[in-house]
Amino acid sequence: MSSTNTKRGKIILFGDSITQMSFSAADCGWGAWIADRYQRRADVLNRGFSGYNSDWFLKFAATDEGQADLFDHDNVKIVTVFFGANDASDLELNPRHHVPLERYKSNMKEIASLARGNFGEDVNIIFIAPPPVCHDARLKFQKDKYKDKATGKLERTLELSGQYAKAMAEVAKELELPCLDVWTKMQDSSSSTKPWQEYLSDGLHLSAAGNKFLGEALIDLIDDLLPELAVTPCTYTGNINSSSRSSISMRRIAPWHDEIDHSNPEKSFRNLSLE
Image (cartoon, rainbow, N blue to C red; front, side, top):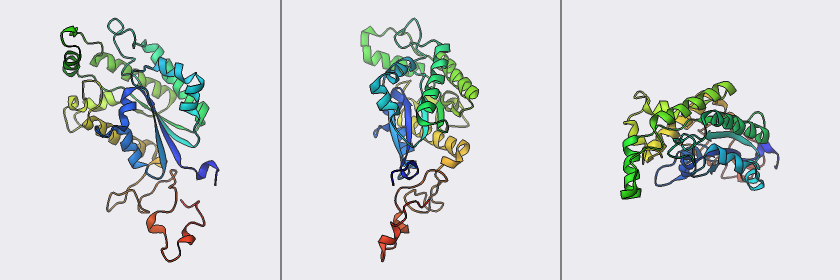
């Protein structure tokens, strides 16, 4: 029972603080939304690094510890790549985090190449573009944090984040990979039920509403563009914990409870290669 196709699949989330915080219980993290959808089918591994830009992520990936942490995993079905919030920092105001646009694009290609090289050419890679930046909320955050030392200058802006979101989409198109353009989608009134500023907790990171927005958008993207990996909840209850839910390629682990014959349970466990 140790062959790859009988093991629980894996979904790996690469990114910065917006990914590291995606398992937040308090903020209904978007990574938790994915883990919930893939119950009993895939383990979701959070590999987000708060404060990192794509340069630093690649530096870590080149170390022995980075290789083990990021890539020593088998049966990986999906990899999300979500960088740009730090890379898009203003060069003059925050040179520490700033990554030039062309190098950022090159880094996205390198991360995709590393994912394919380590997880196989068939691994499904999803790019996620950085979210918009709310100027008023960032200035308030700055004043609350630094008090009299606040500069009143924005090191991250809506314009800069938009440039990096566009660059991410361009790389995705070039590599023929799906891209969830959060920057555009959040600001599209037809795609959201709230003013987009409410999707951000401090003008940069996601609020509970923003995490829900992103989690649902990512699930919708998988359903639409990677239907073989989609999980369909029960039509009647919406639950995903019984045989009424289905997926083409994401097999469930162990029989569902309603598949077990209580009068002869051994029979239900004789063949664990069921779909």
